Length: 91
Image 1 (cartoon, rainbow, N blue to C red):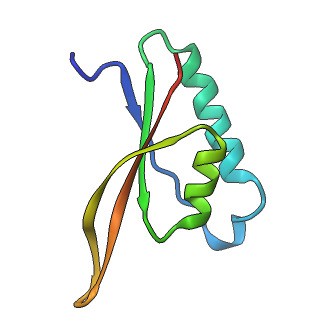
Image 2 (image 1 turned 180 degrees about the vertical axis):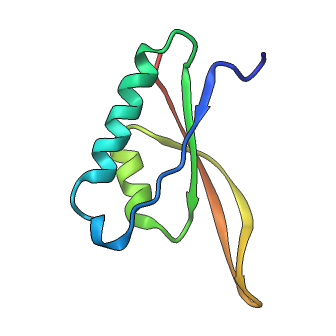
């Protein structure tokens, strides 16, 4: 009950579909749906700290960084990446 007001999403596009506005369109549709939903007030996501293009897009769409899970992802013995946690209020 305490988290019913939040919705979380993740998005991944194959390389050949990137940089065509598809991700932006999908997120706009998701946010439009969330704004009309009677319960959802906050939309959240997580992204790799190395994904600067995605972070920039999320910021342009009104998302704000609220924290990080430091070294959350391990890609090799010496390569770690933070999980950037972002949110947007839709109500």
